[in-house]
Length: 342
Image 1: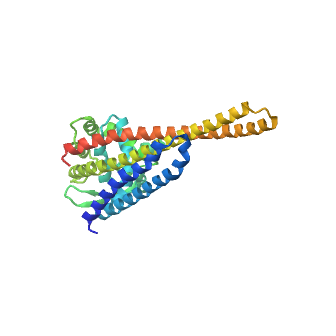
Image 2 (image 1 turned 45 degrees about the vertical axis):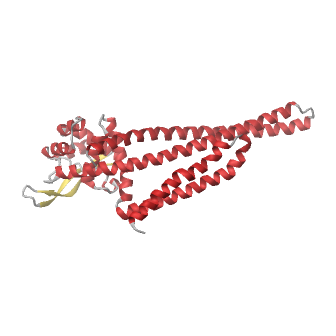
Image 3 (image 1 turned 90 degrees about the vertical axis):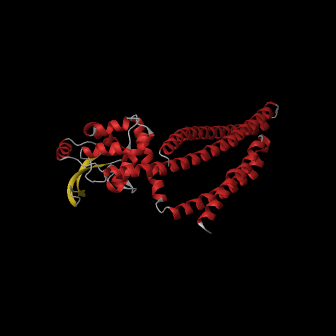
């Protein structure tokens, strides 16, 4: 199978899985009432399982084809899911737009690539400490961060490379690494921070402001950050689309589960009410005692069903909140990509 044929097959399977199989799976939900719950539990769940297997096959084939065309696909997905999304979240708290968060993601990738930041003590932006900062931090330790002297290649004015042992900031968490970067921008690289708050600020202007203040020694630092920014916009936009689509599936699953659980609760209420009517019309004490036991059992089951219902409602609420955030991010990312003609 050629790559183009494989992609066509994936698209065809996606249309089938997204429409036919899911539509088939949801039909019992639309049909079933309280008395038809057993029918849903049988044929409906089988339909959902068929849909799930079909979609799983589609996703597996899509992932396989993506890995063939992009060997770093899995690493990128893990990076954007864990690192980039946190940069976006913390950047927004600082009042920065998604576009500026993407500049920071590009800078982080230029500094440390796509590797798990934990392998490098969360040195996400590879921030080098001055000797004064190293001394001050040792005199007054701060929770979550410290300095370590690490060999680092530095480009000299004549273009040659020289390895130098210098103090670098290291962190206990990604969040501390990102927040410390914001603090250092405000303290030492104010012009670069202004770029991140300027609606017209660009990746080139940000990198140029950093380089002027000695943040980096590489001669091509500005072009490297600028080029990587374009790559990030393209890749991260695709990632956001995939995350949004997955979250839509989660919401759909939650809605389906909610409908099923509502019917289960109503059915349990019907059972309980029937038992109470039996109890009211039972003059025989022995029979009444037996019905009382069944009523208590029905009440216990009802409480369990209602507790499950609340859990599903909370799950669905959380998923819908996440979906709304992703829908907003996708819209912004699409606009950024369009403005860059990507």
